[in-house]
Figure 1 (spheres, rainbow, N blue to C red):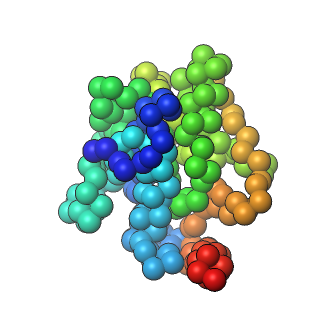
Figure 2 (cartoon, helix red, strand yellow):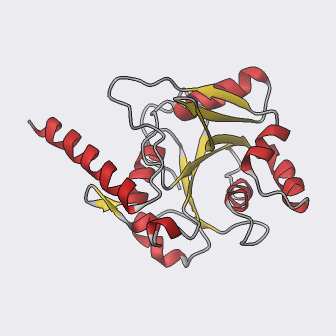
Figure 3 (cartoon, rainbow, N blue to C red):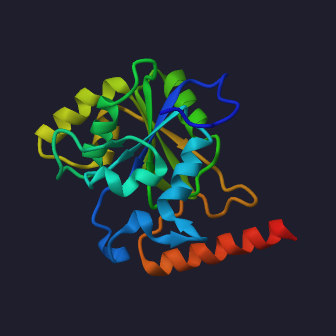
Amino acid sequence: MSTNAKNLSDHPKAAGLILAGGAGRRMGGNKPFRELAGKPLIAHTISAAARQCNHLMIASNEDASLFAAFNLPVIPDKPEPGHGPLGGILGGLSALPDDIDWLVSFPVDCPIVPDDMTLQLIKAATDAGKKAAFASHAGRDHYLSAVWHRNTDEIIMWQLASGDRRVGGVLRVADAVVVDFPVRPGQGKSFININTPTDLKAMDAVLASLINLTDR
């Protein structure tokens, strides 16, 4: 399904995959639908992906009807559930439209990323002749904020067959490019993961203050 993203005509085509799986135990369950600034957490992540991708999908093994309000295809893990985020990414790669070679993974608990993340990651991978790239920010690597060429599916299948579910392991085998995103004024909350109710409350306060400033 196409998004309403604007000004993407000069960018490489990319499909965004919202990684909405996982038990979310530290959040108390149901992580994608926990409310943040008046909307489900997943809605914020979808908005971030829609601004920079031509096509969107949700990776989840839950009943697709749970996500019906977002009108996006829901893709199950490959080869079957139980392989963690790599299973979701492999599922997304298997569902890429024929005219799109790049998949961008957006973890549902990381709702704020730079609007040029996809462009910068694909450019870095292409310039280096690599099939994957991932973000680094404020001294921390973010393996799930990454781009994956469709040909990385074989690397992921090999890794899973070996019993290794580590996303970082696949990125190392693919010799992925690390792209540093500097801390920018007004973007101090980029790449912040929301894993607990405390994290959610803190981010809610940040977003509420930003909304109040905008309304003045």
